[in-house]
Amino acid sequence: MRLISPSLLSADFAHLADDIQMINQSDADWLHIDVMDGTFVPNLSFGFPIMEAIEPICKKPLDVHLMIVHPEKYVERFVDAGAWSVGFHLEAVDDPMPILEQIRKKNCRTCLTINPDIAVERLYPYLKEVDMVLLMSVFAGYGGQKFIPETMDKLRTLKAEITRQGLDTLIEIDGGVNAQNAESLYNAGADVLVAGSAVFHAQDPKEAIRKIKGL
Image 1 (cartoon, rainbow, N blue to C red):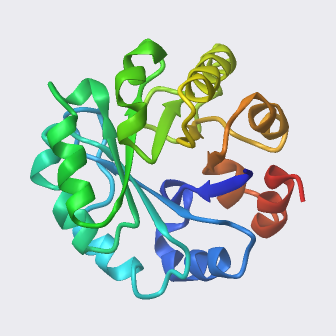
Image 2 (cartoon, helix red, strand yellow; image 1 turned 180 degrees about the vertical axis):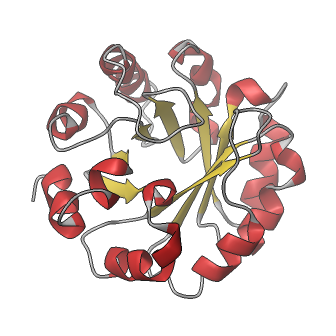
């Protein structure tokens, strides 16, 4: 599977509707929404008003990535605001299972995320419980960072474990993704690539999306 979920964090906020229309007309599969609280990560980003404004005009599924503490307080509201998938960080919670159940009860797809300094093996007990796992290939909190090369080994290890368990859990990669490393990531087992700067800062964003997908 070769999907791409452009990250709205890199869009032109002064012309957000225009950028969303570009995504609608492109070969993008999803739209990635980074939610930061200034506590779990040292930055702030989108909240419910932006989600509610985006949802009626975006024709692509909204792929929401929560970089926040206490995600259990907010996951249901993000689903109500239009999220198609909701992911949160394993290292932000004591036990992810009740939160995954909250999301499932809202008939929403589930995703569990880890930062680069978290061992990929910590995801193994939950692979049967989620629709997708997200490996951060930069540290969560800022756009435009460089891809961490060690992510490739973690990706291959995770893909092997998903195969060993006989699952169809998707793997998403977020951070420093571009047309130069996309093919290697797909070949190593990634199903979904999140790309921000490589798409929205490109001279031709639609063509950048096509190149990342290998079209």
